[in-house]
Image (cartoon, rainbow, N blue to C red):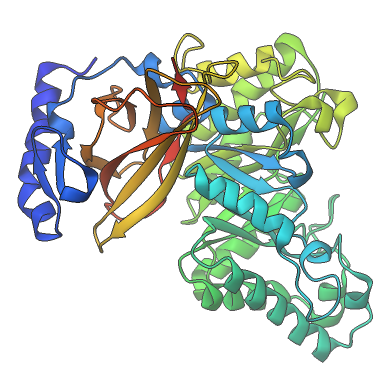
Length: 471
């Protein structure tokens, strides 16, 4: 619970912003009104709830620590109800597993097909999830026509591919893996042979990043690789590149550490120190493709080590696991993920949730059977310093008498006003649980909505919407 002092501070914050909100066409007042009237219920008048009430999922717990918790998503599984339910309940970010790779979006030169990736992005946006774009320039999963181009043609094709893909998703992607896996394994620290390296030389990475910055200045630009998780020849080479880029003003915002582990290649002892040395260069670090083969307590310990390392590095902004369920993992025989083939939570799940400060007793899950509901987010008005969000609650195939859902913002964002609902907050002030205020009873298929205002404080990302729980 928030202390009375904290409650007064929150109320003072909201009341202090009343004039600012009114200037933008939104008055902050006590009481409840229709969302279209321009009046709102201030967050300062709401009661608070315990942290556990809102931190019973990976996404909510991570948000309480100022991080996102994401997963790789495959479009062909979005028709499977348990897959989507687990995705929507637990995660606040997605990475298309294959759907944004070159062979998927530009199989023939100049002919683009975004349909599969669009489905993933649309689903993520409807839930207020971040999207990581993966990947623009990579030696693998290239269509055959790329390898046959001359150097000048390849340069044109690479830049056009970056421009076209980023233009299509401009404003929708939190961060892009601009270049993926450009360095060799082993002790040399050398670049990997690829059409880009062999024909364009060492400058192709810098050129890709400069092109990407011009294509979407708001997206974070990352270099992503594997076997760079500890200090070794490969990570040293990437470190030297990033250091050089920062010194010369080459646009790079983040480095992705894939973090694929097993018993033969466990989480390195210097994992946290390695993340920290990159962060000290002035870039964010992201754990981008985490999976750890194994089971039971040893697997759980590995996951705990990774999460704790991220939490210890201020610029570690989030964690993405490379899939939801073991049965669809790229190395399913190693059972490397947090949910088993039946979507049951494994000990590794509990370890991650605990490391994030969450509790398995918190949160909620959708009501089974017909008495369910969905919560869908959409951004409304936006100003330079804030934006309004709307969440639509829709009953399932049976009537419902009440509902609840969570709205999680990323610090330093703050939710400063709400309407058409009764909000409570966790102790961090980042996770709002919204319940009805006279609009809980819905006929089958009927909808209602509530709204809220978020002060950006330099961060314009969409909030994460939790599962809708109905009764």
